[in-house]
Image (cartoon, rainbow, N blue to C red; front, side, top):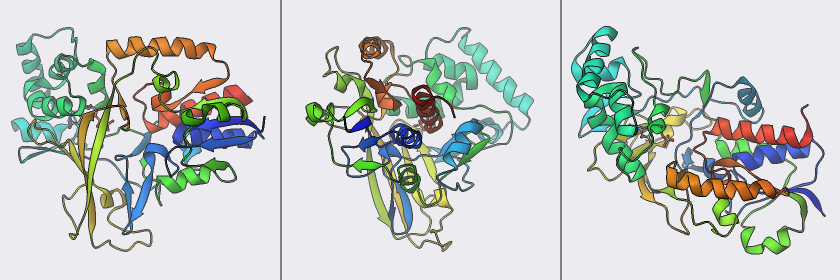
Length: 374
Ligand code: UDP
């Protein structure tokens, strides 16, 4: 065999593993079917703006080990995510905090906000939340659920909040503080110069083949390495033999506007049911409106995100964490455990709603298992 490891997929999982394998003295080849590295964190410089081509990625972690790891490959800026929710023209601060409660109900103190939520929870009579709707109402009350959660969540997932698991909403923090910092993370920011450069730094001196579809040439590629790290969709790898897993996909409508400032924030969520997009990203604000030389960028680029059901041939984004899909995934996982020559990793390989830091940590752990800790 020419290589010790063939890594399928140049996203974060693949790139971290490739870096570690190379460092451990292994012979590594990493391939990707797309014409670029970096997977879904890929950013492209357009008119001096780093455009997040597959959706906004804001790095955040509480894990010091992961933070130390990523900062080897990029310097991070001090971007803090403070999204705004637009409900039929009314603007609210996210995540749910004292600014949101004040705008919604006119309450001024945390105690008043707490009482308002408690009384709405009691009215709804929910003691043991069984689904996202019940969980949301019991956490933030009826009004916030109706205006800021229901429409957005149903657009994003294409399912009723009553059919969705409660834990999805637990990603959203609730604070009785005047604090719009979405991620309550110790470390956060955006890599200066873009994610693509960061991933390229991970892949320095590593052989990369782009526009190379492993599954289309499986016979060839299975014979180039002793072991495979596969970061594509696990159901596709096994030719959908137990049926296909479901995902949500996203369509992006990206446009350049000759305006300095379109929406005054990097992220604005449209939380009503009627607006067809879920959110608008104005990419330049991830870098404070300046290019790499610190010069103000004259124009702007926005992306509207439309959430849709994934169909074969489209890009899968979010795994659907419901019972039906979990049962299918468990079958794939079971057979993959017997496949000792293949390791599955990343959002698609493990069918998990992973954030970037978790993806990196998992790749570091797999590398450690393979090569021993350093
Ligand atoms: N969510 C919501 N209203 C918002 C933003 C998020 O109800 O304005 C809910 C929604 O159910 C979503 C979940 O919170 O699926 C997690 O949102 P997050 O922004 O973390 O999702 P991601 O950034 O991964 O797309």
